[in-house]
Image (cartoon, rainbow over all chains, first blue to last red; front, side, top):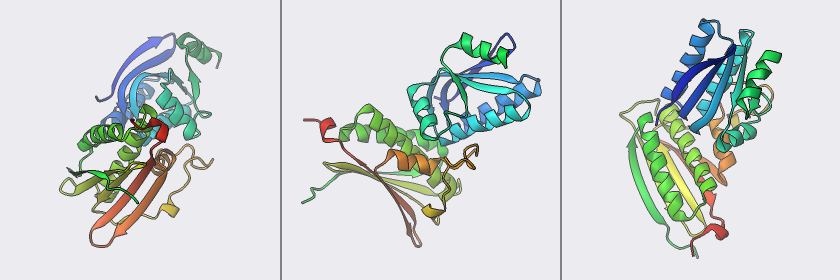
Length: 116
Length: 146
């Protein structure tokens, strides 16, 4: 199953609901394109909802880092929502858990952008 | 005395589309060996990362080349051998992706994940033939089928 992403706007935040696989190839390319597109439109508050991500590999983790850096470099914020146990464990193992702002409640995640 | 292993051998075209084929095979093999769900996922990820290394770095994404997989199920462990047609790499030159300098790098986490998830990881260059990576995961006796 390849990656699927749908985007919805909540207040000033672009919430991206991602499902499937974020892996080398199509999944990573789709995510990269999506972030580039949002930044191009001036949307610098991005919340990636990973609840339905079934598989992420080292390239997918790298793509999350790349997205985080790209948004931060534009003066924006990229946060993560609803990590599965597998993704949570991978971010802990790779010590990226402290790099990302991670939430498990969408309303709180949205309001954390407002405070920023 | 070590008993003879059960062996599964597969040859795949060096193409990223075969990643999911390899994952399906390793899930079945790991299940047969008696691993639990978490170990199964770790083995699957380690094979996935090894396949990417073989296809992308070893075989330079050349679909005319091949990747050979050999799964050996012993009573106490699963050994996976992944062979490509590349010239190998030096493990000691692979940087630590968790160091502060590398934390925000986009790539370089594959070998680290393999090492984290498996009990043993070996790389052997076979002159004129390619590179063989060996992954070993020991079977927790408590998880073995009766």
